[in-house]
Image (cartoon, rainbow, N blue to C red; front, side, top):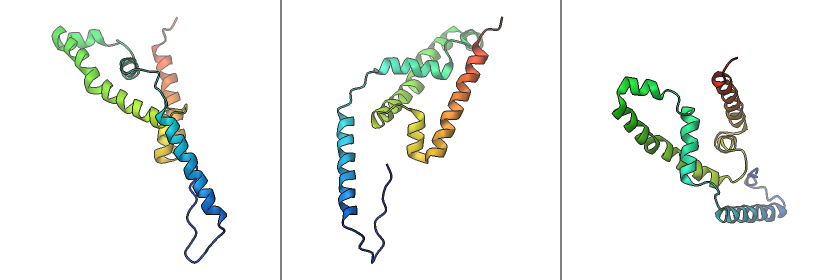
Length: 141
């Protein structure tokens, strides 16, 4: 939604612009009220699991971790990591998802904060990283 700048000092403009602005404000308030009534369909634990697998790519490297740190520290790390990283990230994601209930995720959030150019960059590079991850993790014949 584009914001219309106020008329310059000394320019009265037409009275239709103020009623148009009021209509835009009312539409925004209605959208915000609809967002408050929006019920999330994804709970915190599935979101934590999704975040863990998005960040780590799954249980790859477990053997190396156990070999480097020993079984106790490796298990402790696997149990503590979700609380230090995944739960805060899941809560931020849930907050942003309720603020922007449309489909688009990262692209919408970044576009709203930094503009459409950076939103496009996020979408493009996220897609490139997903393709690269699939190519790296696919077994070769």
